[in-house]
Amino acid sequence: MAESLTSWGRPLFQPSGGNAFLMYLVYGGFDLPPTISRSRYRTEGLPQNIDILAHDRLKHPEAFRSMLEPPLGDQMASQDPTLLDNSLAASQCIRIQGEVPDPGSLDYLRDTIGVVTYFAEQGGVTVFDQQTLRGYSPDRWLAEIAGPADTRLSNHVVILYSTEDDARAEWLHTRGLRKFGRPDISVHGVTQDYRTTVIEMINRFIVMQIQGACIAEGETIRMDGLPEGLTCRHRGHLDDHDFNNVHVEIVGFASRAE
Image 1 (cartoon, rainbow, N blue to C red):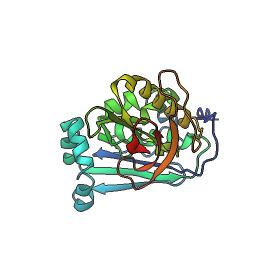
Image 2 (image 1 turned 135 degrees about the horizontal axis):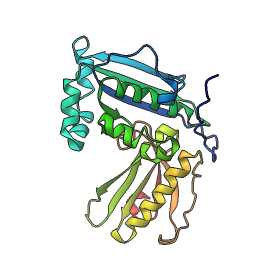
Image 3 (image 1 turned 90 degrees about the horizontal axis):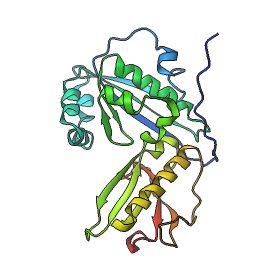
């Protein structure tokens, strides 16, 4: 009997009605073995509701090219120009995507990551995570994402930083929490004296939501090093290009976020 795979549980899970959405692109030239090794890739195979689409650069030139246009191509080039060059030169692209209803465990993510890793190791040259807008070489993917199980789950979410209009404060926000069926986090008006503590707060929210907890509307934040009166407000929509997700705005730092 085959040894069972370790389940990726969500010890704080609360039903939320939020669906997890995944989309990965693997560029390369694939000459694949007939089966995926269950033990090597820690996968039971492609989860229900997750699909694979194959695009050939010669047979489907428009579809292949369109996936490398902005913002994808720009993001690849800004991170590492070789990611875009290698993708453009690839003969194939494997698109793995789908939506999982309000998942009580993260086994769907474990299984999907295993399938992506399989393609990355069987002729892949780049992997792109559409939810975080982050590209990876196969080696970097293995080191940062497909490493030891759930110890790497926070690597599936990124914190982005941009200067506010007056240049005296920053906007900090996440991308990637839709992969867990949870809203992303946004904080406007963060000045330098609060920056480190706000990042710590955001990381706590990331881990909490990965584990399945929900953030209540109007929840107040009490944390050493932060001002009183910070409040959580649910905002946005799934088509918001800043998040590709709904989000929770932490209001109280800047009037523009109210």
